[in-house]
Image (cartoon, rainbow, N blue to C red; front, side):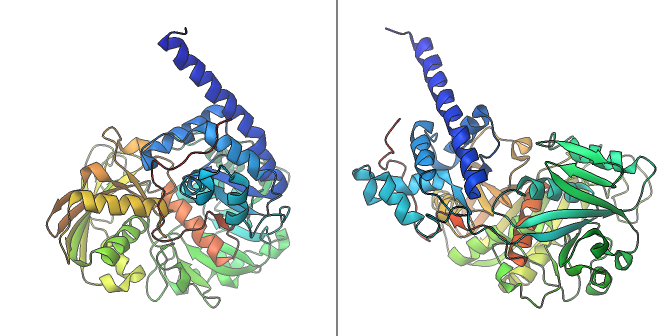
Length: 499
């Protein structure tokens, strides 16, 4: 009779073995069928057995129970027999839907998958979007994270292809330093893969993606066609120009067709928060804005709250990590208070994020005020929404609603939910959701609701920018299972047969 300690070790070895068995299956789906697999937004492609087990463990934050690898392995194995077309499949959501389906009682996984994935079965990788050239104008914090995300999906169902970055030359060793900053990041860790510098061709080669480095200071003077780039979308992440007149300089460059700004747009520019108003992007829109990181964190949650409870008015206080706009130590700054040391102070400053919500969600115009405090952390911020609702609710009811929406709602990629008493800001580094509701911190008093929303103001925002890019270029992979409002897997549904 094995001891309890021996049983735990044996269980771990079994699960590790099953995760190892899943790796070649995930790879085969990715390379042969252009299928990207994930667990609640956490990609499984090119991950180790430990990473896969961690992703299964993470599912408890959503489903309140760890996702059994013994049940996902047969699901992934079954997917490899269907000769699928290009798509993105969330294994956890697919598993949850199976558990509550009629097929679960009979153990007929094959029939379930054939119904759920009927549109892509037998398509042998077909459906891959036509490649679309992307140029990053600027290569700072957001630019490098965009590069990581786009390069990471270059061989998948996404049609985005990073072709070039445009910067001002900083010296003779500029190329090597740019590559080094992409390779190593103090906040987000090392680049996942290989990066080489091609000095002769003035390029960075990241995981096989050839990225031309173009030195220029005048957006209109760049001839992208000379580098084989055409019909490109330029992503301006410099923040130097934020209105149509300034950004239109990019459109005068040869080879450019559209421009996306990674900052709040001024004037009549459309400020897009993916998931909320991205359908407003028309073919005629040559220049649009992806709004700000804070606006992307606030707006999806505000939309859910206004749809379900109505928002009479409210205030948003942002506790924001410091940025490169601030000084490391006290020095002159054109902005109020921002000249004081970012590393030593909490800095009260202004934010237009609350008002900017109205650009994406006009019905909230004039209902929200906002302010911000910059704090001495390098990444991950928090928005505190103090809302006066149109009707009363309770903490439990509100949290159940937000958790359900994070699972199966139309904004589940934008709004995540967690109710752990142990999490702190660093636990959210690298999250792809626009905002994560901290359920334990929720306060409700009749019609007053106070919500605490974490967000990775760098990576989470960059993920939103990429979603806008994919929508602009019609290059987003079809995602499964498809969202059906009101559909929520129960936590005690039938399980997949164990292997």
